[in-house]
Length: 142
Image (cartoon, rainbow, N blue to C red; front, side, top):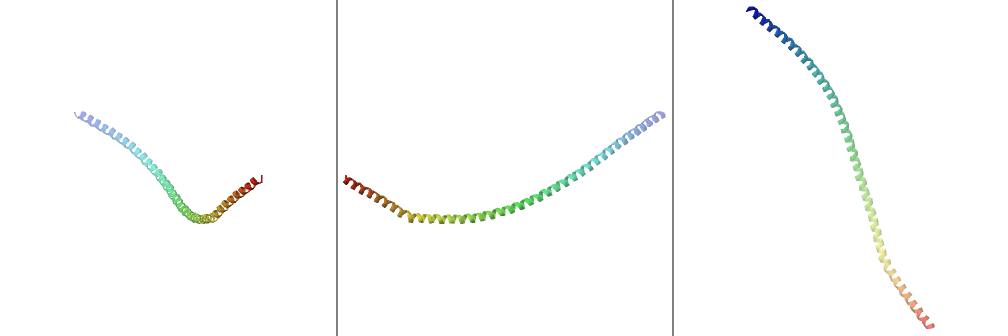
């Protein structure tokens, strides 16, 4: 029995050694995988850091350009407001002048129209009287 026990113990020892070797090989493979994963994560982290810096730089450029554009828009808006105000003042002046001329033309029409109408009426009446008078004398001479 002693030999059988030794064989079983030796078999168990060989199995334990083989299992330990398999565990060591598996752990070495896992360690290599972990190193690969670690290097991939570090590489990804560096690329992500570079991308974030580029995004931050692009965002800063966009912010600066947007700020400049808004400043230019404010300046343009002020110029448009100033131009509109001066245009409104000029338009008001033109309207006052036109209204003055309209009033002047209306007063002139009122002053001239009645006498001109009377002159036309009297001229027409005189013309008819002369025509009647001449036709009366022409009728007597025949």
